[in-house]
Length: 236
Image 1 (cartoon, one colour):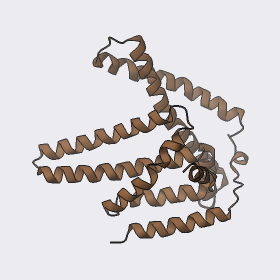
Image 2 (cartoon, rainbow, N blue to C red):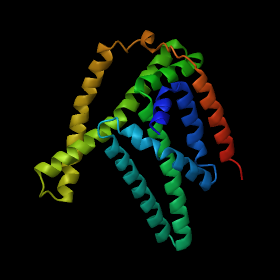
Image 3 (cartoon, rainbow, N blue to C red):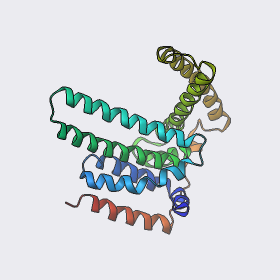
Image 4 (tube, one colour):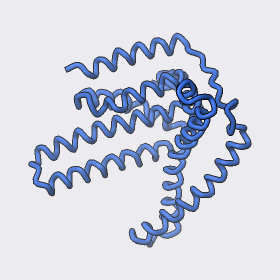
């Protein structure tokens, strides 16, 4: 399994980004059994990919808690509107499977590909459409967003842990007031750090976003396997 993870990391980022963009919307269109198959394939990969990131496993747990809350909200709303219980359970199960597949797909892309590599892939694809000057700006914005999203989760988790240790007697209402304020303040400081990091690495110009990708035989094989698996998802 670890060799599969290393092979996934070594794939061309353009291929991984294209696969995610194609498969993501399709998870809402294919049969729920096909979506469940995608979940079963991605489920073993994400923990291995997250193990190399600081607090990666906690980030995965937090996202699945997010899925659970959304499923409970949908089930509660359906129940209050008079939907029969068997349909409530069926719809909630389908939503859980499709959301889990979407989250696992996004995590697989984000954990197996650096934010800069994703930005370079976007710049390569956008350059023929919007030009060289605009494409690097789009790539930089996307790279910062991809980098900042897990940073937000890490910051929120760290603030919550500090609050639990320093204020063990604080109630839920007080924590609901303290934690968001502390997270926003910390993220404001990290925004300035990210600005300095971009400037110090020379990423604020088009030359830094000239892609130098090399397509390999492994990429070709994986592209063929993905096309085959994707066609099987739509079989009745």
